[in-house]
Image 1 (cartoon, rainbow, N blue to C red):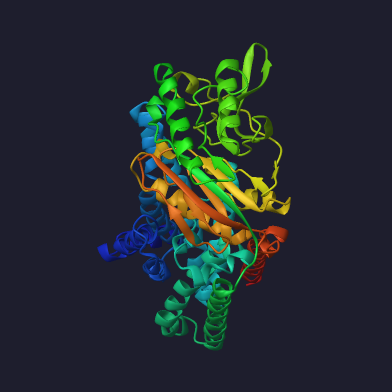
Image 2 (cartoon, rainbow, N blue to C red; image 1 turned 60 degrees about the vertical axis):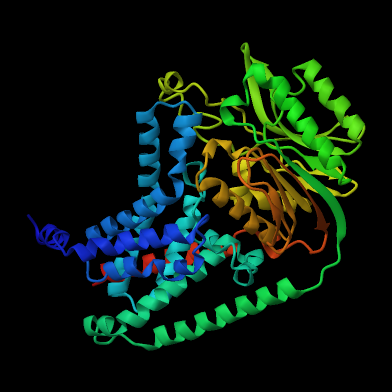
Length: 526
């Protein structure tokens, strides 16, 4: 057994407190997110983890990071089991394995972060308030794209209620908020561990930390000042009146042929209630019509005739047949816009499909999965970032899961969308934290792109968010609801983030590469 292995096993028998610290970090992170919304905790949540990494073997650092990550992600994405098992009809064991595998995969990012932090805090003169946010954002951004991407529970999302602080997301995106939160955690570590770093490295200077603290303070003051200015500024845009319909159709009943008539009648009844509020546009949720629009000619005609009666724009979600290939129907998850005369004005086909929800990834490699699953769709992704033109503004209609991808939503506003109407079916998640967290992400899409958002959800949460991220109205879960709101359109010019995207995140990636390369070079030259 070599000396490094001995050192690892020596540290693995540390105190219970050593193992408790990363657990505390994971728990504090969970508490920071919706629906508990104890968001101030996020600003110190990483400190126990960072402290536990001090003077540890790099393998132990990875383990501690994994512990934090497992607690963090198990507490925020546990609902995947409900979606897979209860509604997706995947058997218990495969459903549990999917959740376990997902949490372990996501935790790896925290484990890698911990290894890097553990290494750099020992050998570099950089303060933790720089190391922590730069590498946290780098890994968080990579997680948003790797293996189709899963940016759920990004650190910045915990702050969706801290409106003065998060207005700067129209420049940096949500990752800029993640950076600030991680930086403050690093600063707390710096204040606690400066003397210990100096004892380990007698020539370790205090000025980088002092300069970093001053710089971070200036940045936070700037962000708050910018946010208060944005929130207080008067805006003058045009107004569009939108109604969203929440049909509250249970997931296991949505496609029951015996309930087809009742579901259609529910949406027609609620829509007639909305008409009393004189909306310019009415939005139904994702796959709200219990048939394939355009394929079922009788029911499709019924919807268009109803549309002519209400004489307003109607947006609804529907499964659509894209093509027939080798006797097999190629399906899209689509949003359909009908004009007041009942004609199809525009159709958007969902681009970013949900793995294990709308398609089975690597099905060619694991053909047996088809036999395990009975309720997973087999959809074809769309290719066009469709902008729907109306007299009231240019609409984009991200469907469900797409709203959590800032880079995808930005492509709609870059192409001219000045209203986002997102349609979703969160019935899959049951009474879990997922609908609350899903809704909270729309706050950032509104701020990043400076456009208002209307959200029509089958079982909730439906609602409206203005271009400053203020929640104007929202529904409860698992109730029928009709909400109507005036949205201000064109109040802002195209935001920096809409124009240029994730430049801030790319800057963090570049800095990360430079720091690691420099560390490797210096280590190799010794």
